[in-house]
Length: 357
Image (tube, rainbow, N blue to C red; front, side, top):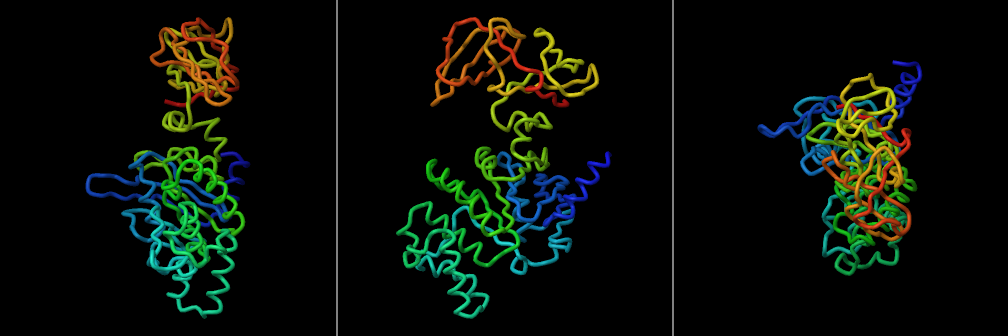
């Protein structure tokens, strides 16, 4: 371990709000979590991303106090969190369904938790007014949930969660009930609110776009294990495992053995990449569609199978003899080729990544 990496680890540990170490959870023969270890830093927007059944919701429920792990520890500010019952944790969970009380006004929904704690009425009124102003719902304070749009109901649920000023706010698929346009607006709103209120947010989602647009860091999970924890750009540009390379965005993957200047793929030759792997080591090469260029020459040759235009970007699928799936190319503007055309494909070595198999 280098001095730099030791320093980075020490800094991360000092900033960690939540420490999760070796957490496992089984339900009969099903392993929901398998030795999960990660940290969540103070004030960050952290995402747990993965397909259904990967364990992300189970981990969220452990943080909330609704599940207990079979093994492992969870700390908050260095103190044991698992020994504290759910209602005693400085943690709040915003449910996917929002769970608003239909007979109560917006203001009453937001005030409910504070009133249950027995806070003075004047303090409740002040805090509710402040949080409604923060989420932009002051004009709707007297309305009931059925009089609100989906985006407004989502804001009420968020206001009710943050009005109690938790150290940690957990969000379970918070935008899944919204249509695409409102979801995009609420992604920006959630990010703004998280910065404004200064609370650490942890969101569970299977939506890559949602995680990439919201989170400061993302833990990609699969089959109960953490595959990689990184910033969105780093996850996209430098996936560390085959699963992450295939799960995050579109990717062209080639299987072969590492060479000094790339990856040797049977039937295709040596494809350019950087990676520092020992020669002969089994590896995957990943190159994103936007990094692949159509040329007259190139390292590969194939025939255009399909061309689609999506508002400023053309998606081109090229069948390459000896490769089991089309190579995808993303080109700006309308495509200059048509289905059936023979083309060359090329990319810079720096734009491709080698991944251990």
